Image (cartoon, rainbow, N blue to C red):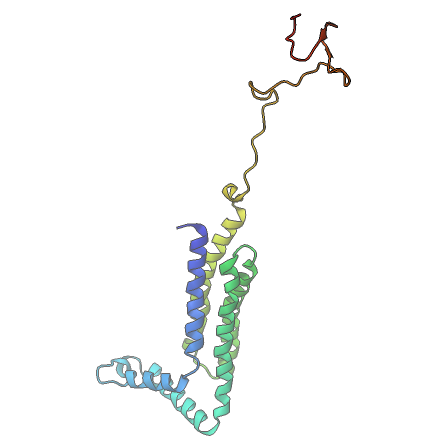
Amino acid sequence: MSTLTRVRVWLVVFVIGLVVSGVTAFPLEAESRLLVRLLHADWSPAPEHLPVLVEWIDHVHRGIVATNDEFPFLAYGTDWLAFAHLVIAIAFWGPYRDPVRNIWVVHFGMISCVAIVPLALIAGPVRGIPWWWQLIDISFGVFGIIPLLFAHRGIRQLAAAPPDTAALPDTAAPSDATGPADAPVPSTTPVSEESGVGVGESGAVRRPGVPAGGS
């Protein structure tokens, strides 16, 4: 697998994560309802072994349902959140086409992944998010930056690699200074414009059609 292909594969992995995160931010009520059903299923050990998690998911689901019933316009904010994920994913078409020229997009993605950490640690307590759920939010940045780091390393390798000589136009081979052996040697014998009679190096008169040294 070439370096360019590896870079594109890692970029696609990151874009898939963005798209999934964005699309799943639309049907929050349906998703939370499904999660509650799974956690409270007869075969689920979650209520017994993870009661804190189950209680939190139930609380979140009740909040989403109440908000959508009384204040459905608030969900418009999460719609824009989902849309932002999709727009950012589109931006990575640039480094997919030309990684070296658009490496700044990868830098932007890496900075965004790092910025998730302070956002979760600052906004989480303010919004009443449990500390262990903040760690889950931080994991999005941790796992998100991994494919970008691999892609960034590959792009640096592409930038440092010499240009492909096969892609350059062919250059003509330098000709021999002496010329081909069978190339005709131009005559240095001056010829009279009126009579067509030439004069050799020795001063002998040469007429057209008469070989040198002949009469």
